[in-house]
Length: 331
Image (cartoon, rainbow, N blue to C red; front, side, top):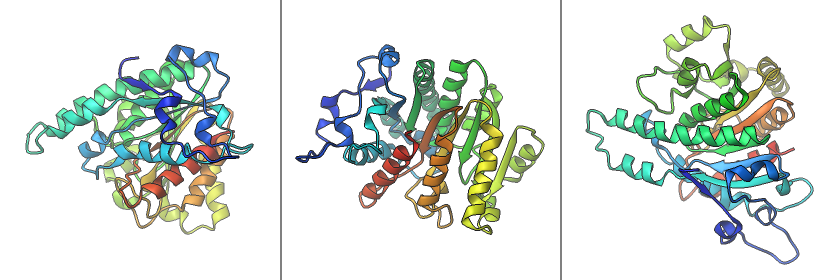
């Protein structure tokens, strides 16, 4: 498929740090030569990355999420392969080739009056590749695990899932933001708006929404929608941990009676290197709990983790966290 870089073992072998007597995750994951081969491999999950941060820049956020996929691989491929991590259940597909789009985005002058529109056009091209990949994966009976990248890629996930299933898809989004901004041009803050507009999005719940960063018009729109709902983080922090987990299960119940996707924006995690890093958010262990709970649902169709923005000083922390999230999801 055009726009997709499919990996083989040779591509990642240099990342894997072998040790005598041990088997690393990267030595046991599976590979394919073509997307048409997906249905022939006995593996439940398909992992791929989207190394871009164009949508984040278009939404006035902090760049850096393009590096999350590399950090993730450096950590994930070097964890132990054992009875709990189950690497044989994973096809390491590869990545959306964002190199050309990233270069074009860097060449656009921020003083250009059409700067954001031009970024939006580039995002639209990535959307098409992401949606086609997700459609192929789900149509083959697999569950994609997608590592971004910006939250703009949620649109491609929803479109691809919807087109594979031939119906709208429900979403549970662990996020400090709704990403329901206006649809004047594509960016990381309006993927759900576009998906709703084009009927790819069914029921939508946001868990951990921050009141300080949600415009009033979005609150009003959601309160008048039977399909949308949210739990404010400001309300959740007043609860003991077991009540927070119970609240998460209640939101999960709202979407999981039918096909749904789980979205995790790393902006929701306290102190985590992300495009909109927050001093107030969920602890990593709580996020792991949420992912583990959601992974048990029969109708879950994908996991998307986005907006992690590692620096040289934090790349190890980010990579390890993403690896934990992925292995928590694998059943």
